[in-house]
Length: 120
Image 1 (cartoon, rainbow, N blue to C red):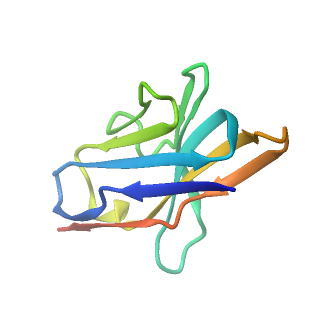
Image 2: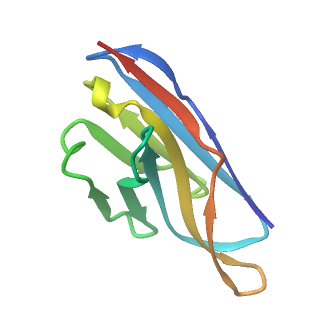
């Protein structure tokens, strides 16, 4: 089994910063990519940012220039540095990882989500 555990959400004023963390553990052979998605009330889950094992990144247009995704040295962690936060960034943020398990199966794993609330 594979687990993703997120941390770092909270309440912040507009213009402030937060840093989200996600750590993967379990029966992992390799992690192909990791990313962050978010879901606001009444809206569909949307991509925020992704990073491949090679370090290539992709961002939603709405967060470009404000958010930065990065991998930890251990490569089983991913971070999302969020700067200049806006009220419209308020959502539950989910970590996602594409993982090759120890039995060589591919698994798309999700974390439990962490709430980010930006007050105006």
